[in-house]
Amino acid sequence: MSGLAPADPGPDRALVLEGIGLRLGGRSLVEGLDLTVPPGEVVTLMGPSGVGKSSLLDFVCGTLDPAFEASGRVRLAGRELTGLPPERRAVGILFQDDLLFPHLSVAENLAFGIPPSVRGRRRRRARVAEALAEAGLAGFESRDPATLSGGQRARVALFRTLLAEPRALLLDEPFGKLDVALRDRVRRFVFDHARARALPTLLVTHDPADARAAGGPRVELSTPGMQQFG
Ligand SMILES: Nc1ncnc2c1ncn2[C@@H]1O[C@H](COP(=O)(O)OP(=O)(O)OP(=O)(O)O)[C@@H](O)[C@H]1O
View (cartoon, protein in one colour):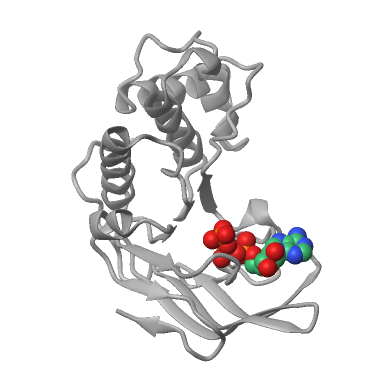
C-alpha cells in the first residue's frame, strides 16, 4: 500500500456513466445521465431527497433493487460493468452506517476486505498491519468496533473498502453521522486516500461543505431531463 503521494492516474481509469435511466413503477427518476469521473477526482452528486442518488450508486455497484428498470452503460477503466455481478466490478462503497461487523475485531473487519486472491495467513496479516498503520490505528487490532470513536470506525470502514483494491469509490453520505469537527477531518482523510490511489470517486451528499471539500465538479440531480452541471 502506498503513502499519500498521488498515484499515476493512468490514461483510461475513469468511471464513465452513459445514458443512465432509472425508472420505478412507471415513474422516471433519472433520465439520460452522462457523467465521467476522472481518476483521483471526487465528483459530488446532490439533489433533493428521493431523486434517485443512492439508487444511481446502487446501479453502478450492481446492487440496484430489481424493482427498478435501468438503462444505460457503466464503464470503469475501459471495462464494461453493466451486467457484471457486484463482486466482479471492483467498485468500493462506503455508507452513512459503517456496517462494521460488531462480533469481529478491528483486524478481522479489515481482513474481511482482502480479496481471496491474496493467499496465505502471513500475507493477509501483513495487509491488515499496513492498513492499520495507514489508518493511524496501529495497536487497535483486537478492539471491538463498539469501543471505537466515530472517526476511528470511519477509518476502519474506509480501509476495509480499500483493502478490496477497488478501482472506483462510491460514497453514500458517509460523513452524515459524524459531528461537525470530526466530519471535516474524516472527509479530508477519505478524499486524500481516494486521490492518492487515483480512484474515480462519486460522493452523494446533502451537505454543501462536503461538496466544497471534495473540490471536484458538482452534479445536481433534479427532475428527469433537468440534470445540471456546476
Ligand atoms: N428497493 C426499493 N423499492 C422501492 N422503492 C425504492 C427502493 N429503493 C428506493 N426506492 C424509492 O426510489 C426513490 C429514490 O430513492 P433513493 O434512495 O435513490 O433517493 P435519494 O436521492 O438517494 O434520496 P435521499 O437523499 O433521501 O437519500 C425514492 O422514491 C425511494 O422511495
